[in-house]
Length: 355
Ligand SMILES: Cc1cc2nc3c(=O)[nH]c(=O)nc-3n(C[C@H](O)[C@H](O)[C@H](O)COP(=O)(O)OP(=O)(O)OC[C@H]3O[C@@H](n4cnc5c(N)ncnc54)[C@H](O)[C@@H]3O)c2cc1C
Image (cartoon, rainbow, N blue to C red; front, side, top):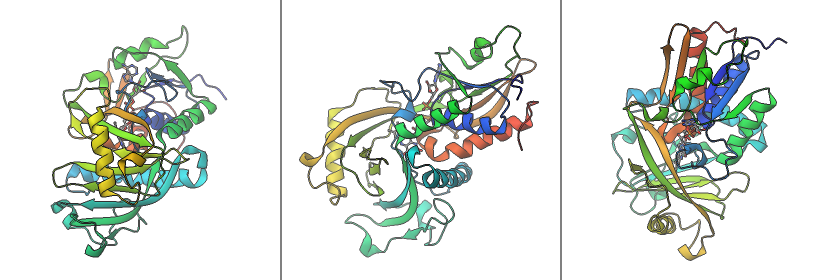
């Protein structure tokens, strides 16, 4: 089969870049697709800026109280469908379906309209509002539904391995801006690169709508069986996310807007473990019993208005397809975002796609 048609470059090997590259690979089987990234899933010491390496990660739906959240819910439902298939068919991918539980101390209007039987995480999620008798002390609202969690290291490496096994290329390089990618891999006499998909997480800090939200969590050896979140009255959170394939459990976590501190704060670790013992006594009975594997600190690439999926013309016949700014939801929106990128490309491309 000829591979001489227009190549595609995807910037970024986080969950968004890997998912976009995977979907584009199946839509454009004849195109040479190269992922260019400063950091890849096998980086030994990932930086705090490589958010995908530090995520929990679970799918915790957000009630659809705004147009943005309604749109994101569609992306999340589609992602849930794909993740369920992966969990069922590819046990080595590090994805597992499981029960999700939430407790809220100070419920707002966004949850008061929800009813048992509603679609919360996606069709067939078994969503149920908990009875008062099922709530722990201090919680006023709670729910139970089917969701999934990922072992992020296993999952991202699995995506990358599949991409490479199907003919995808990788190139480790630190770009100064997205447009630099057009000329980076241009070979003499080879077809010109006209499409760059920008999954750089933060768009090189050139988008004024971008902020970072620092997250600190603790990975412990003990393995929990479901993902559970408690939102406290003071705005703090405590959650547990089991990592499939015996990866331990994430005890989280903080959401610190604009805080770039990249080391773990010991006092944050102590506070999270203490809160965990108080909120989820069935997991670990005392702080001393925790077997801590490591602290995690990552910067969520949050964008005001939500993820940017948009085509930007660059010169006469080049374009950058943007796909960055997924904030704290990159995993749970990933497949929906990747398919949206492929749709955008289909409308703006001369490259023959497989329908
Ligand atoms: C503590 C924490 C917990 C989280 N929990 C969850 C969760 O439970 N569920 C969920 O869905 N999400 C969660 N997230 C959010 C999730 O991690 C992000 O939304 C997601 O990782 C963003 O993916 P991305 O691919 O857009 O960016 P990134 O993962 O940051 O990847 C960006 C890629 O672009 C490359 N890149 C950037 N700049 C350049 C450059 N100049 N040159 C070359 N390459 C470049 C990087 O090297 C990297 O490969 C969490 C995040 C944190 C920090």
